[in-house]
Image (cartoon, rainbow, N blue to C red; front, side):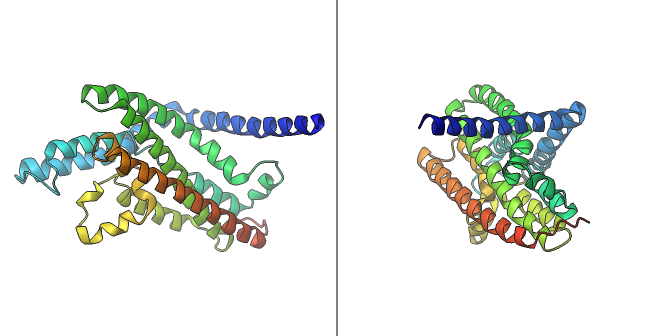
Amino acid sequence: MSGRAANIRRGLGLGLGWRVAALKNGFRDATVYRIEFISEIFGAAFVPAAIQAVLWYAIFKVGGATEIAGMNYSELVRYTLATILFTQIRGGDHDFELMEMIRTGQLSNYLLRPVGVIEFVYIRGVASRLLIAGICLLLGMGVGIWFGLSPGRMLGAMFLAVLGNVIHYQIGSVLATIAFLWEDAYSLLMVKNMAVSILSGELLPLNLFPEATQWVWKSLPFYLYVFGPAQYALGHWSHVEFARNLAIAFLWILFFWGAIRISWKWGMKTYVSVGG
């Protein structure tokens, strides 16, 4: 019994060891060019915010509108500022890395290692996002107190955004398996990213969609990336609504976990490691 327990502990130690090593490696890889890393963060976060700011100014200050979809100018500006905290967390191009590994045959090198290739790629890629999430959480809590926002709500919103990052990668991992069939799944992943930009609430609040079309974003998980966290952080969602959407996020994670297992099991049957 003691030998079996020792083997279990050794196995757990090895499993934790490669995950920590992958996290460290991913962080070093993302920050090796620090200026590029910082400029990428600011660019991706503030470009959508700048687009929104110009749009709100044109509608309210130039066009003379007083309200749009039940939201006034100050509420929309607050939404824009809140989205800055979450837009970068949902990102990451780890699914493109998976696709490229399949296309070029590099996947074979990882199949020989005692690690799960999908989990390994995600852990390496998520390292920089966790750093950004921590910075945004501290920034959101600090600034939020000034504007009367609850630190507890900000913590919950950031947790939902991190779950959105997991779902984002899971979807990309399923789509990346198209590379087992086609030479290149790049265009499909790009279409996915464009859809996410619109349906996550990154560019526009999703409640500005016409009532007849709101079922589209409500039936997809993308709103959990940016719109949902922003709604909870700003107090527009009750705690009950947040708990319900948190449960929905976990259900999506479970669903895509199953989809990954099925799609990759199918993909490995067709994998020939030729490269391209």
